[in-house]
Length: 163
Image (tube, rainbow, N blue to C red):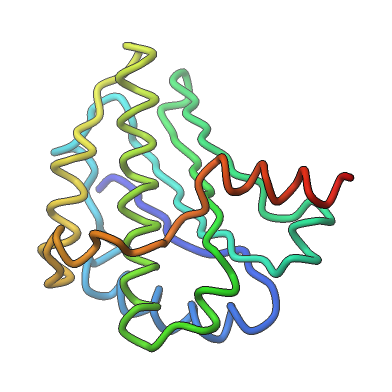
């Protein structure tokens, strides 16, 4: 089997919120036995780490976005920041959707990197659709869900704290 690793790096209350959500997601997609081969023969290991840090931790340098694909090692390591305050203030269902949106955007980031480099093929659309199906979530349910801070949001936040 190919390997898919989904985890989190978080601060404060985010851990207590995200832990049961990620446990449920891993169980529903059979994360321990997830087979990546239908989506890529070039990328054999994928790590998706959800970053969710409060403002002080972000300002201290925690939770930097990472979109790393190591083609020679056949692996991807994606860490996209989730908006902390929104997660804390959201209801239970929205928190779940935010987490799924983060995972879906992480998968899309791998596909985008592979398309741009042309060094690997990765069916990010197929993989995301499979996961959404396993979770019983339609793509439309994720429309308007803010599960990832954009690069612009992250950079604006960091610029604010550097000044």
